[in-house]
Image 1 (tube, rainbow, N blue to C red):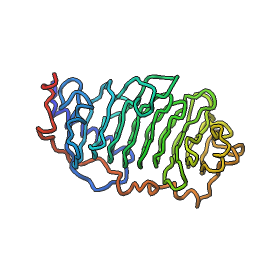
Image 2: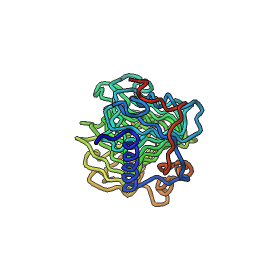
Image 3: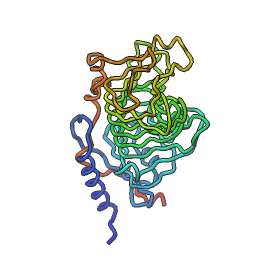
Image 4: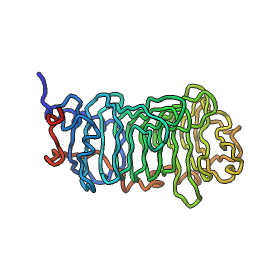
Length: 338
């Protein structure tokens, strides 16, 4: 017997809750009610495309918006504008909900998915740029403050994740690329993420762009896993005060013994902050690391071991427990888009 969309939505949301219950969750702000908007390519939801659903959210939105995306391959460039905060975009499984595009060139123009708004959440999505080797080709650009991603797959080759500005949290995400594939100047915590390098030489996983010692930015990888197809380094400095820390992270033999690269600028060796703390695996041996990287003490590492470094406890929110259907001002029955 075929299900109507309301039945499907109930089953889908229940499945999502069961999935969330079996996965670690963010420190919750208080639970709350969200406005539910559905996206379904077959026409059984409110919208057929993700961008149409975002476009329907009013400017200067103050409500929690939960955009539920049915499994499928969505070939579109997606932008969450700066004037549309408090949006969550969620699939049920990252492997089943795929947002894909093929573009290259400017790092701010090539992304498949761009987040300019604050208080954004992405859950269980694959976001990919299929351009491949040759030039910059961003999959995900995050330029809003207080953005969080859970269980997402972020895939490209060069500059995969432009972690641009703001405070960000990534949990249980899979991030793949070859050259500088996590780059930018955000203040970000990557917790229990899997970084997979496609580098076949000495390309860098990170290119953090901190410009001055007064900036409270940097990337921390906590309890992560690093693998790859051949060899790579952990990072190189896009900015002179680049700051990256790997803590309690498994490193396969993909990581070259020197660990880090100064991008051909000797002067940056005295200004960068590249630290490792209690990492393990064949790539974590620090005996041959460059002398300008650091083995952190427990006291030095303490700052990087909690969400306090991004103030996360005050803004990382859990999945809403109650939903209400969007009003006609937002929800637009898919028959009008046929």
